[in-house]
Image (cartoon, rainbow, N blue to C red; front, side, top):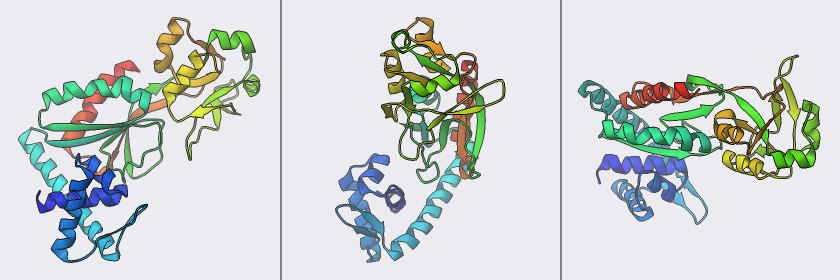
Length: 297
């Protein structure tokens, strides 16, 4: 492995806080990743990382070395992107992230055709309903429901995503159907929650404008598709993107609740760190995804 490749390992290990995680991100075993770090330390005769059984931190010189190594890697990536733009043949890895359900249904099917047309490109897709730090995790393109206000990112809208409140016919037969937003207070609301999650209320559309409704339930999850399964199984009311529950609504497994007071629409789009905007392979995938997904919305 070259010196530059060892630098990549070191940078990812520091960013992810773990030799195992850094190696996995670069498709290396923990042993190989650890050896690459040792090679760097032996090269300089200095310890770059402090390791304990529970924590990995940089030494003072390790932190300074990381700052310079990261800039070297970024400069190299930009140089490769420039060459790729002239050659017309995109090369390298694209790191994507998306929410679980949206990623499975909409993003994952786009990847094989794109890679078939661009043989020099590798795509690594990470799916999570939790908030992702796009810059720290070195994400090239993040598909997102909502519109974050992070000025370090560029937002490209793909479409509006209507949301609906849904429950099973069995649940509504047993508990009654809400007639007004205030009725939600006596229902088991199924919530998407995780540490620092914002979903402790639902914002519904009313004739007087958006209204925040404090909602609660006996259980929650960080996986949106689990919410849909719970709703279909008769456990409560869920707030879901319409496209995710369209089939269940059509075949009667779910019923729309409070159709005159739907949740606010979410915007669906992709986020890109400013420094990666000119990478042709990232730009190509973003344009391809926008073209393929806009008809869905």
